Length: 386
Ligand SMILES: Cc1cc2nc3c(=O)[nH]c(=O)nc-3n(C[C@H](O)[C@H](O)[C@H](O)COP(=O)(O)OP(=O)(O)OC[C@H]3O[C@@H](n4cnc5c(N)ncnc54)[C@H](O)[C@@H]3O)c2cc1C
Image 1 (cartoon, rainbow, N blue to C red):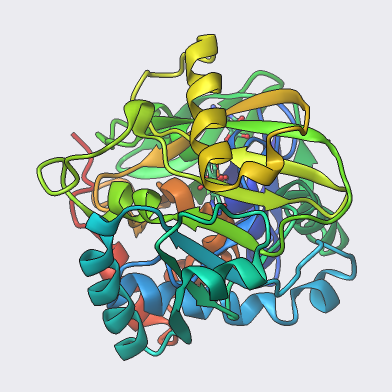
Image 2 (tube, rainbow, N blue to C red):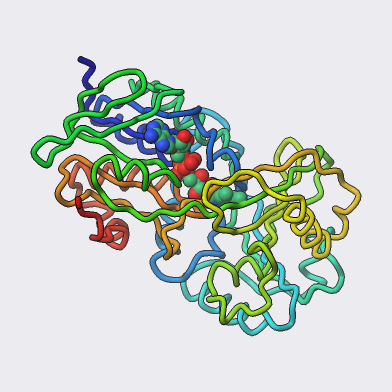
């Protein structure tokens, strides 16, 4: 029988980061039902935003992850296209000024280097923006990375540390005896193990069910348009205040919310394609979308950045953010199922938070004292076998 010290389920940015770190102390198998980075981690934007996070614990967590990014390329021995290009949140609507002013004050108090710009200052950094915009917030600390390269880089570095990776293999059951994990059943056979990490992203609830654990992580669908390759035109990442309002305000507070939960996210890849997003909707795992969503995203983006109007869209992608309801992931052991760990639910921040997640899972399973202040708020104590 095949035996491993640990089995990580899921080969997105989260599972590959965990496998890489866990391999410091254990012989690890990573099981992925499709391919590395082929689900949400391959259908998302590339932003490592700090200024968009909620003050308090979310910023503390994001900063810890951002710090790891500083040396990650060196550590993983490859380019992940990490770039400190800065980030901007465009304020399109006078009604958002008050909300954004207080947002900036809170972010500055939380130690984020962010400033409020007027329309002219914003357009001097991003000439593609419309003249009518009211202003923007700007932070030099915001950065970006290529998410596809990130999952691959973690996976390759994990392999160098001895991790075995089995793609196109699905975990179909978790074997529990006397309240302890003893193995997993996969589509390519049984693996004995005492530790299973559920890094299934939006599918984590289904995986938890296999261990008799009720875990509510909902897929929150997002659509992004991808343009043809063009010369550099967008510098760093751009969001709009509607994106922040959609993320931070209740429906009651955010009365002018556009259809499909649309809020601008605009960036340009190193190879020249524009990534134009995005929507936020609960539609289960339904991948089929109607043309109206694509048109609505394009209308929203070209209104704020009219210079992108003539650029051709070559395709779109649909991803499912793993949504927990409070904007924070769950990183915890499950009470009543020894050896079963959940590390999922990063919603729209999984790329930003992947580096710290691997470290936190290791601290959790090795009972390390370090990082406890980052771990505690992610341990929801609602994870119990039923
Ligand atoms: C439109 C959009 C834009 C985004 N933009 C950003 C951004 O700019 N910055 C940012 O930080 N985040 C962003 N995100 C969020 C980010 O993409 C996610 O938080 C992150 O990719 C989640 O990674 P994951 O590894 O948890 O999930 P996934 O990438 O979905 O990985 C989970 C893996 O588990 C596998 N799996 C599931 N069940 C099984 C099973 N039974 N057996 C084996 N394998 C299984 C799946 O095949 C999948 O590969 C965005 C998301 C979307 C949708």
